[in-house]
Image 1 (tube, protein in one colour):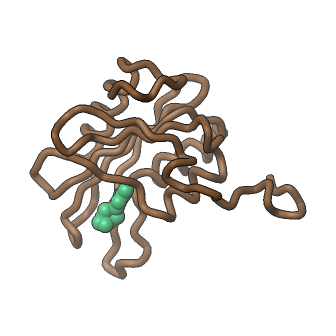
Image 2 (tube, helix red, strand yellow):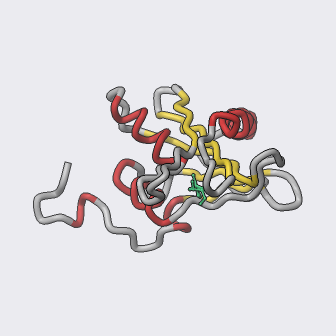
Image 3 (tube, helix red, strand yellow):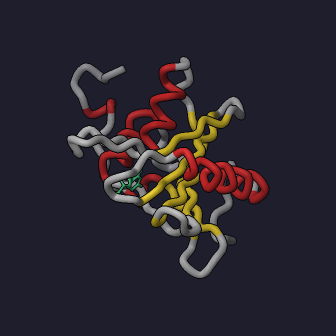
Length: 150
Ligand code: THU
């Protein structure tokens, strides 16, 4: 990966991606047959995993990333360092899967956009780490509410 020298070690990036890839087997995606797994690293070192969960009514589908975030937040954890994401057609190896806009917005709620790292698989192998601020520039966060949010 090289260019990213953040708070996450290369070994941890590999571990998170292995967890994300493993989680694809839990994906419930009978409609799209696109299976996504995610592994979210909390600041305290705990890893929360997630997969996409689809629905016959289509729009209630939940992405792997949000599944991982909501699992963590519902367990009382709100500080995060990084997330690894792997996605691809059912039965094939997971590949490059950038998070959707809704998931980026959920990350914005809980993460420092200059520090939080999104780890993706490169098309030709290897990992790519990006900051949330690169994927969601000028994002709207809790601090933009008059109330200050939270
Ligand atoms: N999906 C995710 O879970 N995460 C992403 O980053 C992209 C899309 C899911 C939503 C839906 O179940 C399927 O992949 C196809 O869009």
